[in-house]
Image 1 (cartoon, rainbow, N blue to C red):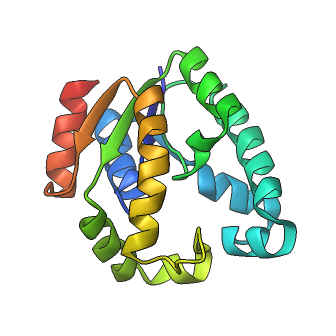
Image 2 (image 1 turned 90 degrees about the vertical axis):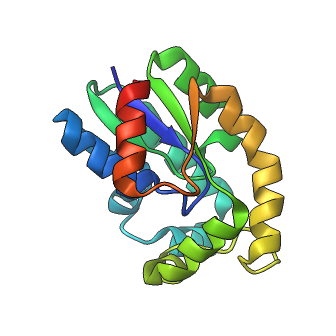
Length: 171
């Protein structure tokens, strides 16, 4: 069975997912990394050169591939759930999906603390990536995260180790 982590960028899907996979002796798969590797360019470049719709097509294809594997911890991109087809694949795959919920202010701090975010990932609206953008996108996406999730963990005030311990008990 695969364990899939969903949530907004900066919630810790990659960091927590890698630690969780290690603790379970499983392989970690980052969906965004798969897309970047197959496209040969960053997500920001894909958005700029090919458009968001093309990125979402690549994302759907990558999701379909990784869900064929078994015994993996998979971190999805923050927007993977926006496509109904992706939500349906997640529900039909039999994986254990966990929503890593995080307060907008904490997300902003984490995003700003990651030097690669600005280089690798595009802003999602004309709001420029700040707290207003995070609140707007969370309002749109949170119901979708909850729609696909079997469980939810608030990681706003948890260390990586605490989050992994909670997740291990939830699985």
